[in-house]
Image (cartoon, rainbow, N blue to C red; front, top):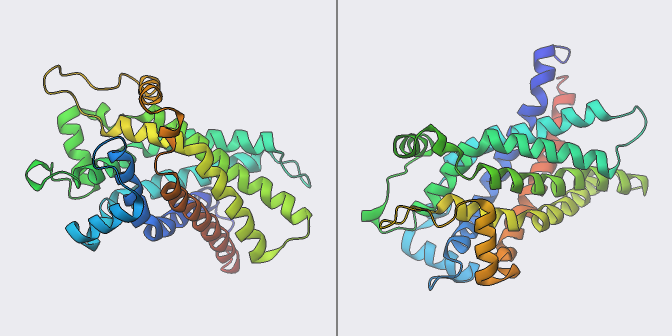
Length: 296
């Protein structure tokens, strides 16, 4: 089966999907707290991660931390499968035998893979944000987003098919920034560390930790704008949205809260993104070795 052309073409994408799903199951509770922090930033309900987590557990129970898991897993199948699969394909095509790719080449592959994958995964990502935001409303005001498919259906019914691509531009921009830090950072770190004599699990863990930091640092401002764009609703009086574009959103946030507003929830974001990146990359390495040991 290892020589089957269909399997060879699908294997990088299957590896990426499985890696992302494993990481998401581990990180979903932290991601939920991160979204709550961003949605309440600048309001009277704004609080730190410990306070928000305690309030969620007290008022909504443990299941609140897994709100939107179906959308999160769907997104990993599509988005992470695509970005890791495309990155592997792009880097393989650009490689010269016996010579590692440089920062520029790895960076280009990561940016391209992240942007393309984000566009494909935007409907699931939007559904996840809507489900998480909806869970914060009083029971009488909730839209009834029970799972990723009903959420997508309601979005199409209320906003048309194009509604599934709401926030696609900031989502793609954020994905490009995150993948630049994560995938390019991991590849370059592995090359440098292995040249320094580091091997085995220590190499995988250290390079993934470096990648996790840079993924968080580069992507949070874009993630914050993306969340604000996806959660916005039309004014009941004027019928207008608060933000006309991601650039308009970023400009207004900068004017209202300064540059540090974009880093609201950074500790929680880092705790969510860095481990997710690390778990994804470690799982990817393990799955690749498993395929090889099984002769696939």
